[in-house]
Length: 80
Image (tube, rainbow, N blue to C red; front, top):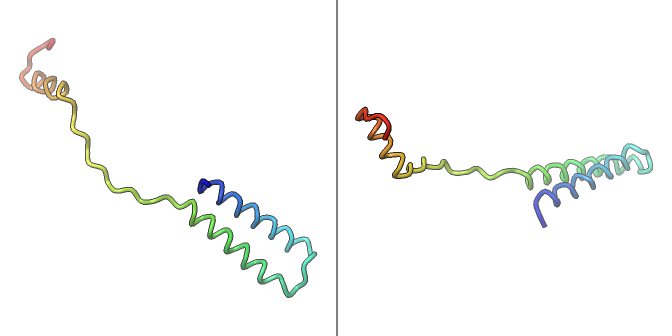
C-alpha cells in the first residue's frame, strides 16, 4: 500500500472521530480519549508523509562535446 493512501485513510478516520466527538453522541468521559486518538492519527499521517532527506548530489560531468565547445570558445575560434 502506498504511503499516501495509508495516510489518507488515517486522516479520514481522524475526521470521523472528530465528527463523532463534536456531534455529542459520546459521553463526556470519552472526550479526552477521542481527542488523543485524533491527535495520534494526525501525527501518524504526518510521519508517514514525511519526505526523506536526500543526500546532496554531485554535479554531473558535462558531455565531451561540451568540453570541446568550451575549449573552442576559450581559444576564440569562430564557428566551430
